[in-house]
Length: 161
Image (cartoon, rainbow, N blue to C red; front, side, top):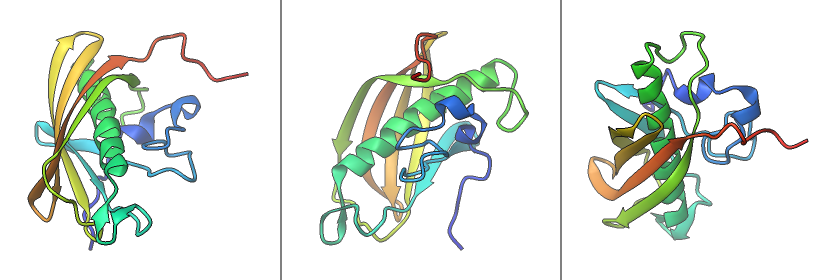
């Protein structure tokens, strides 16, 4: 049985902001990355599809970057939600974050036939700005690491009319 995140912050995003290609639950074509707590770290588990290849047998780096990006913004949201006294699934709308910067280091080729596990460590920089350091593993082998600086989504981000 494949491991999965049961309580994900993305499940609690309001419908108007649940369309991200990486983590939006309402985007039928998207990846549906799901980020939750594992102890004091965050975790996202994703199995790339066969078409997500760079060369046969290995994952395209853009998928890994997208995983780190969405894991970072989801981790920031889950951390601020907890800081505000809430937990995933408690019925309170969580904060939504956007990416201010994304840095990715590809450590070794990533096989495309196994689940990828992103593990995040969160650092508050400012009440509206958080840094998430992420490591991506395939079969317990570190394949990539990244850093996301995420900021609380500005109120000017609204749905297009």
